[in-house]
Image (cartoon, rainbow, N blue to C red; front, side, top):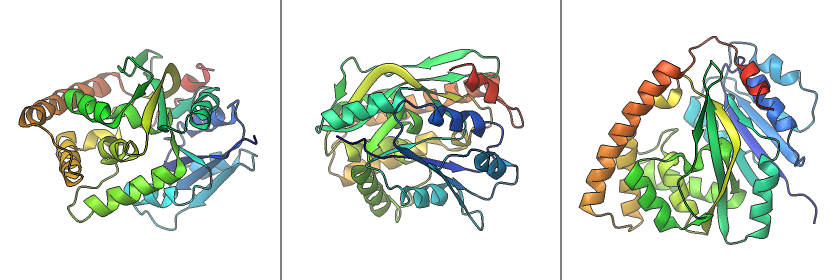
Length: 290
């Protein structure tokens, strides 16, 4: 069977400090039939020059004529995917060499799997590694198991882009449903899918978890995600689930509200004291991981 194309999608603005290591990690993949589509949202640094310095026909860059915002830039990027599978990646993320190979193997051999994810890790500026292992004991999880796990822990990182591989049609259809169901109610922003998107994908199959660290990222004190009120995102996700006729008990709802505040506060503190600020070049940290 010929190798199926994987579309790796990256939305970037001013990623010059880290994007070199990210692209090099994609080039180092043992699975070679991929396209890396980078949509640059009017960077004012030398991000474009760095991207164009890589002489590989599989790397494509789209340059916006105006800053359309992170959310819309990412949505437009999804439409450009030509592959059978989709992986999204940030400009400060890293894929271990066998990431695509091992995830593709699961999706090709298991038609019952909607998407596959893996353990990941984060690197601090001092080189310290913080493991982020998924607590599912089994290799697979159903939709109901995912939703209850997320509500109990207020943790939506199962579908973190760099650690997850999706079937393209299911992924695009899930985004359409997300936009149709939440846009009018004001539920949608760039991080809303972190909770809701997997629950839509899992209507069509199960989640497969590879209990191995195959991806990594940087801890950033100025992380874009930290600017959002995650408690509000959780409420929006619950409202969307109720539109899908999913019943959530009052106890579980209250518990989830408490947990999301605790987790968001702890995350802010960790990123503030361990994360890097702007302007630091962190490509060396990724190169040490090869």
